[in-house]
Image (cartoon, rainbow over all chains, first blue to last red; front, side, top):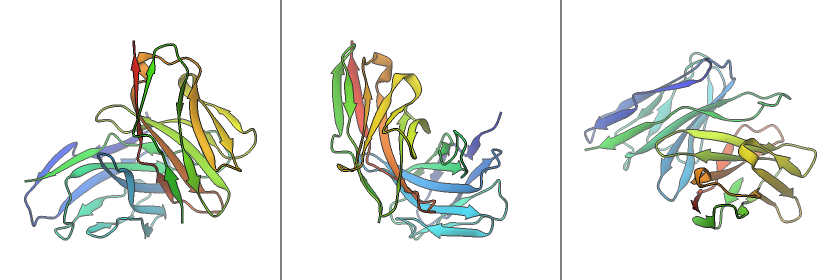
Length: 116
Length: 114
């Protein structure tokens, strides 16, 4: 079945450590996204990528980094510069075009990061 | 810049009654509008979208939404609520003039009481 796989589901980090969240999709989607979810603030866009080897900052990119070396993969690194990294992180993908599924975001199950 | 407002943090409705979850948006180009639902500790699931065409859009699980350009609104509705509809609902907007950036509202928690 096609979908998006995020790993790990739960992650604990000590202050000062970088961590990388994995996001893999087998939907053949061109665009991929990372969102952060905090209670009462909805989803906030961290980074997005429209094609391989290209990505753009979202509204809260500071303290995060991404890469898009393959169409299927869009890992997110939470660096020590991110002052409040405890949150639920969601990866998504989409494809343009005219079909019924076009432009719709397909989400992974999420990764919950907790800083100790 | 794009933005989405969901003015209600929470909506309470009795089972069998109609429900409305409100959404207003701001985007410079043509709006692509979406509704998603989230159950606890899960990713979001797509409900419906407006890209072009009829202002009344029908989606999954009996939900529908009406696009109102003059009021820049895209309210989610259902004629008869079910207890199982209780969840967190998100409205989202994307600039249809070539942009891929999709922005979400803060979410509205729907409680349907039996």
